[in-house]
Structure formats: structure tokens, C-alpha cells
Length: 242
Image (tube, rainbow, N blue to C red; front, side, top):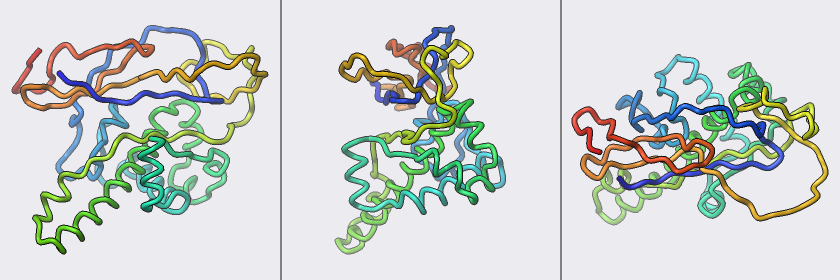
């Protein structure tokens, strides 16, 4: 199998340094998706979440974030190039905390950001990613019509790398590093302290997506503590290649 995926890192936002046992999780990248799913890279951002149709709790969150990103992070050609270079974009936590429309549509967003930041930021990421893909598709459609090419083929071939949402302001209250306990593992926290030594950034990959060489099925596999872990078997029912 060939692999592709992205890692997750952080700055002032961190998880506790304990190492509880993480379950090995492998999920088909299309699991839970219907033909009406409007997010091409859903399982690359939300690998453990099933796509929900209109009216569900997840659909309301997606709609709220689409509106928020449209207002505060409008997608254009300049930003597309910046995303291509940096592979991330900033989400101002203080702005999120006072955005009344966002809080109305997603009342528990701050609580969920603290308790499950990976999933919450995954919602921001998948929405921004799809906004860029849609922008490229609109451009490709115009070019195809002007050139006489097949429009469907032009827009179906659109690909864009994974871009991650990164928090750009501190959540309150700030926590001293000495107070970071195992009970905070997996939660989003804001730390304050004194930097006494600098080193190079060491990204840690938390998920990887693998494509089966036989059926081209894709599955996402959690990488425990950044340790490389391959899938054992293809999860496609009609394949099961090893």
C-alpha cells in the first residue's frame, strides 16, 4: 500500500505529556459518506466522524463554520497560494468566543474546542479545504468551457493538499507548565512559561491515509505517539488485500 497523510503540531496549545495507551484505529476513508457528501476530503480531516445529512448536529456545525470562514477567512487566489505554501491557516480563538452568530449556531463550540480540539478544528479544516477546492473547480469550469474541454473531467480532477486549522490566540485561563497533569491529556490547553532553550520544530504525525494498490480504496490509520503504523489489511469488503 502507498501512504499519504499529514501530521499535527502546536505552539502554545498542547496536550499533557503523559502516554496513555491509544487504541489503534483504522477506518475506510469513505466510511459513512453518501453520494451527497459535499466534502471531498472528509475522512482526511474527520477520520472517526460519519458525514451527517442536512438537519443533523454535525450539519449545523458545518453550516456555522462555513458562514464564519466566509466572513473572516474568505477564500481567494492569494489565500489559496498561501495555503499551498503553509498548509495551515489561523483561527482566532478570542474572535470565535465572541462571534454571536457562531455561538448561536454552535452553542458548545468553546467547550468542544477544549475537550476535543482535534475534531473541532477538523470541522474548520474540512470546510476551508472544500472552499479552496470549489474555487479551483469554478476556475477550471470557466477554462474548460472557453477551451471546449470536457467540464466534468476538468472539475473531477481537482486535488488540493490537506490544510490544518491552527489556533492563533490563547484560551483563558492560561496554565503554568508545572500544572499540566495527565487529566488534561487530549484536551486543548493554553500554557504560559519561560522559554529557556530552543530547538528545531519536530512535527508529529497523528494520522496517515493509505491507498490500496489493488482496489485503490483509502483508509486512515492513527499513528500512536507519532510512531509509523501501516494498515494490516484493506478494509474494502470486496478486496481484503494485505
